[in-house]
Length: 313
Image (tube, rainbow, N blue to C red):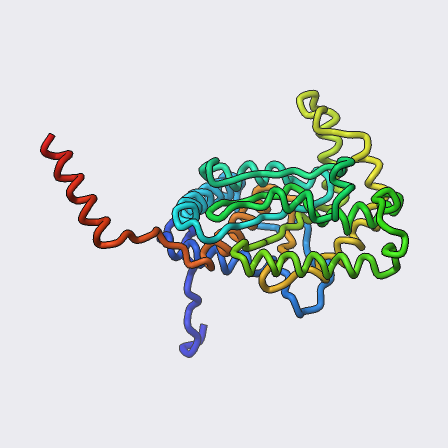
């Protein structure tokens, strides 16, 4: 090393950082997986696996610190009662959505969190517009809402299997070649509306490889305790893998925005994926400028009188 060269500053280990530094590190880390609104996007350029020289034990420790930070921030979100956060999870089968939701939000107070899963629409839901069934489950102020699948199914599975669209009882003149572009526009406007009313939306695509999905399917078949997780339809959908990837390519490119971004999460390594997700959520909560409510001077005086009376009992 020449005299002019300065030694590179070594980054502190995550667990040695103070809370503010951890939040900043989480923001920096998650940024690499966020899809910018204006930049060109190619899903094929995003990795499904990240090679990291960190043990699973160390990854679990880092995630635990992130979970603790989320728990603290969610408590302030609930107390402040102004903003709400909507997390949307989309992925191919066996990508790890359920596990990510379970582990990343394990420390969050259940009173301030709600999970909604969306399967095939019911007859009642088909009698409404495609956003209706999800609107009913939006989080209240102060809460975190989680959509395990969402209205994005309407530009995914419905697009891949067009016979589903035909069963939606739409007027025929509305089913045109531009229907997908129209739905993208509806979704962008809907998410902008939510943002303007205090609900922040962030969206995760768990990017699992076809080979890793195959491996997880086989594990579910071989393990009797996991047989219940496997459906024959899951395996049949693998035939349409390329169609789904094309649909994801289009929807992410058309619906990632500054106020409602997509994160493409490498999902072959579950532990790593969960850290990416936790980091992105920490970033979203931090940008809300959360703080505990401050009571009036009169209220403070009243509390001191109560304290005095309690001490004198």
